[in-house]
Every structure is written in C-alpha cells, then in structure tokens.
Length: 393
Image (cartoon, rainbow, N blue to C red; front, side):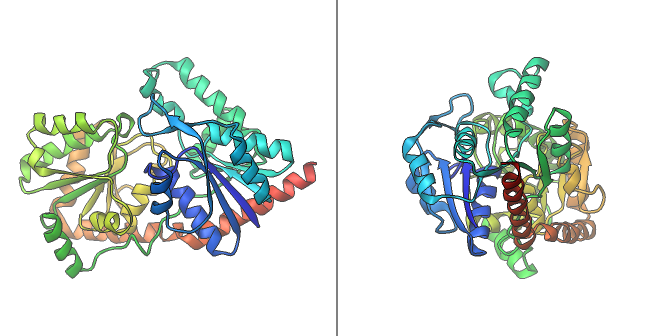
C-alpha cells in the first residue's frame, strides 16, 4: 500500500501529534508499505536528524504561528509539495492536523480522487486561551464547527479516544469513524531494574521513592502551575522530594518564577526538551508520573510514563479517564484541585508497596497500546477507507 501522511507539525517541534506521525511512518514502513511524509517544519535538517526511520519527507513552506509559539503556519498551495505527492501516487492520504497542511491533503485527495483518512487528536476548544477566547462560548462553538466541517470531507475519521469520538459526533460529524488508541514504544519506555534505578537516581540526583516527573509542553492549557502548587504542599512534608519537569514551551519562564515564589526552586529540575533514549532514561529514573492537564485526549507522554512502570497522578478529565483507573494504576482528582492532587502525590511517595503495585498495573495497562496492535488498526482503517471511497465513486 502507498500511504501519504500529512501534518502541520513535525520535528524539531515536540508534541503528541509529532510522535504519532513519526511512529506511524516507522511502523507502516517496517510492515512493507511504501510511506511518504508531507509536513511543515521550522528546521528541515533537525527534522531529518530527529526522526527514527528513513521514510522520505517533503516539507511545506511555512512561517511561525505567532499566536501559538513553536507551531508553524504552512502555505497549502505549495506546488513543489503537490508535485512530489503525485509523483508518489498514493493509494490513501492520511492527514493529522486540520490546518494548512491538512487542508492541502483534502484538496489534493478530492481533486485527484484518492481515498483520505483524517485523525483528529485534540480538543481545540481548550486551546483558545492562546488567543484570549477560552471563556467565549461562541468561539468554542466556532472551533468545533470548523473542525467538524473539515473532517466531514474525509472518507474515514480516526479518533484516539472514545470521548473525543463522542464529542465529534455530538458536534455534527457524519462520516465513518474508528477509535484507534495511540501507540507507545514499550521497548524503549520500560521499567528500570532495581540496579538501573539506583544508577539513574544517582545520575540525576534524585531521592529514593520521592521523585516525580512531568513530561510535556509547558503551556497554559497543560496546567503545570497546578502541579507546582501541589508539589509545594508535598515538599513541605517531604523536604527531600524532587520534581522533574521535562519539556519546554511558552510558559516556562512563568513556571520558573512560580517555583521561586513557592520556595521550591531548588527541588524542581527543568531539563528542557529530551528525546529518544535520554528521554526514556529520565522518565524511568523517577517514581511517579504527574500531569494536571484537563485538555488531554490520548496523551503520548502519559502512555510513556505508564510504560516505564510509573503510576499516574492526574485529573478526572477527558481522555485521562480512559487510561487511568483510580486506585489501580494511579489516582485522579478534580481539575484545578491542587490540594487533592498533592494528597495523591504524598500517598504514593510514602507508600512504596502501593506505588510499586500501581506501577506494575500501569505497565500492564499500556501493553495493549503496542506497535503490533497500532499497525493492525491502521492497516484495517486504510483498507476500509479505500474500499469505501472506491464504492462511492
């Protein structure tokens, strides 16, 4: 099968969509399919070096998206890209973002009568804070209306979670849909042996049983400030506890300032962006994964934390409820309630038996999100999409 994958976001950007796009390309290529990527990137050389495969890439011309630092706005009428696409002659086009690149994919598919799949990854109405419209009901309705209108043009829509699939239906999605959970590399992200844990803790200067890790973008919608406030309560009772923050983003400066205000700056480690084996080692060096984000769909970072054998402290919102079973592989509290969040953190940090048991359950939970299941699901989706498109023309 010849598969063209489109995305408005790609390396050196680091986010869940980039991870899914890159893993999809690698998995499908390894299965013998002919795959090509068509993406926007701020640095083509870094993008080529960061990927974990040799799938060919064509880059859209793009400029920085000033309303959301780090993202790009692509020119959808890029003739050079479209020429590369038709030289490739795909059987199916799969777009992962509904912006310039995604729209280019849809237009190209419609013009040349090619089957098209669209994956919707995100609750975009939760990101309106970047343009100061998060409190406006009309803006949320408009975000959903625009998203659904675009995805209704696809032959098949993939949602990583059931809750997002339900939301798309509620807001008017009519086309065929499948739920395909995101994949995690369970070989790279794995629990550390007791010996390795000791070595890694020494390497990163972390205490036994009392180190927490957040991994992801540092931006307003991720609520990292709630994690810091919760950790300050834990640190007051456990002064040796450490919180590692892995990632970067537009809110990093404010978060560093907040650690000073809370008096926990010496106990919070900002690592910046990490990738590959270095990222996996940093995660499994810790004991507990934390995220207070209420906007998550099927977060790759949480899957990677669970695959590393870490229980999760999170919030009772959206896709988190499909990953974390309260009291079994982690704890969930109400979004924004940092006192309850801190109580969950404290319980796991002070009960080694509970933390270990939940960590093992977390690892067992994500085994069903491995590469084989993900590859099978994508192949089935493409076959269905191609057949549906053929019968409709």
